[in-house]
Length: 129
Image 1 (cartoon, one colour):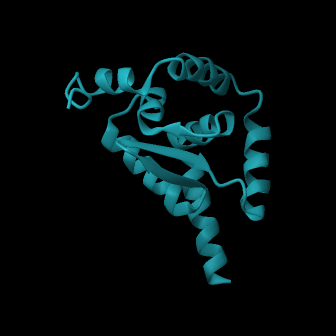
Image 2: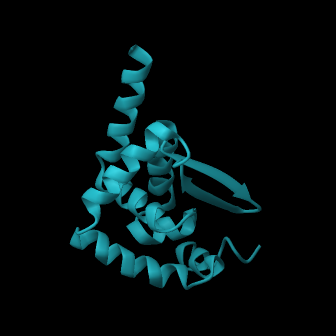
């Protein structure tokens, strides 16, 4: 019982923050997003985005994978107990005006190459190497 309660606590903690909920919503819309696109969406520093992603990964809601210098994130929908929760969250957010605004922003962000976003976020330093 304790392990299950701990897992639930971690999941609800992860979903209790507005920016993390925005990230989850973005990952519902896109199968996978790189860190720079998520950082651009929620308009925080890379370190802050990384902390949010750490909470989401620790909760078990999100997986990450590294591909070269890029880190990609996706929801863990394949787990039955999480799939139901993710579907419920998606239904709750379906008519939210902030989510609709994020969807438009996400469209603009995903139309850009990750290198362009990285240059913008890092003032040309990180991608020139």
